[in-house]
Image (tube, rainbow, N blue to C red; front, side, top):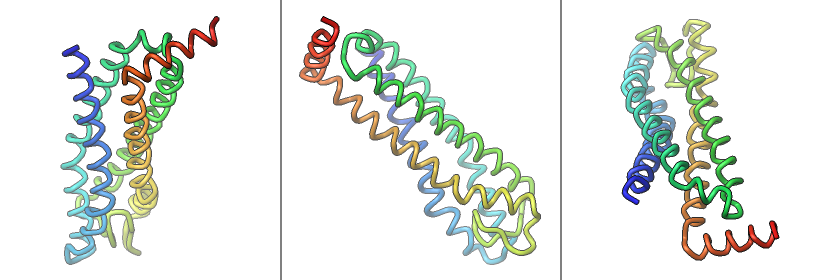
Length: 184
C-alpha cells in the first residue's frame, strides 16, 4: 500500500508542476517579458525564464512518469477485472504521449529562440520585424504550443481524477460485477 501512495504522490506532484508551470509561463512570463524595456531585453528575459523552467519541468515530467508506471503496476489486476479501467488507462497513456510529444517539440522550438540570448521580441511568443527568421518562426510555433501543453496536461488531471473515482470500493465492486456480466 505504501508503494501506491508514493507512486500516486509522484504522479500527482509531477503532473501538477507540469500543468501549472507551463500554464503560468504561458499566461505570465511570455506576456510580462514585453515589459522588460527593449525588444532585446524582452528576448533575454523570456529565454532566461524558460531556460530556468526547463530542468524543473523535466524533473516534474520524470516524477509523473515514474509515478504513472508505479500506479499502473500497482493496479494491474484492476485492468483486466474492472470494467472501464483498461479503456481509461489507454486514454490516459495516449494523452500522456501527446503531451510529451508537444512538450518535446516545444523545447526544440524554444532552443531555436534561445540560441539568440537577447533575441529581439515583442513578447515571449511574438517576434518583431528584426527578429531573425528562424527565431521568428519558432516563436510563432511556440505561440500555439504554449497553450497545447496545459490543455493536454489539464486533460490528464481530469482523467486522473476519474481514475481515482474508479478506485472507490463501490466503483471497484460494480466494475468487477459488470465485467462478470459481460463475460458470463
